[in-house]
Length: 94
Figure 1 (cartoon, rainbow, N blue to C red):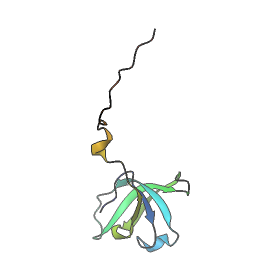
Figure 2: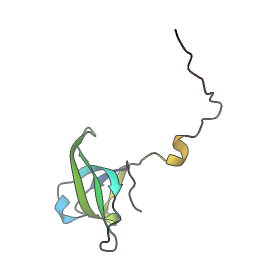
Figure 3: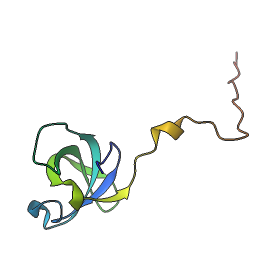
């Protein structure tokens, strides 16, 4: 399954030999560039242990070697109202 924008991945040598030292990676975009079957170019940020972005990178990886740590929010439910929730209009102050 292709990663999505916002997904956090653990990238190891399973995804490519260049990642003998594993890293965390937050996906910005998945390129639709032609490549080998089962491989993909990803743009995103390398993350430190605290989940903060430390470097922007483009990586070429085997999809089957990626491990999802956290998923992007589902856009179909992001704007859905919660049952029983009320929309409150802000009041004007003078």
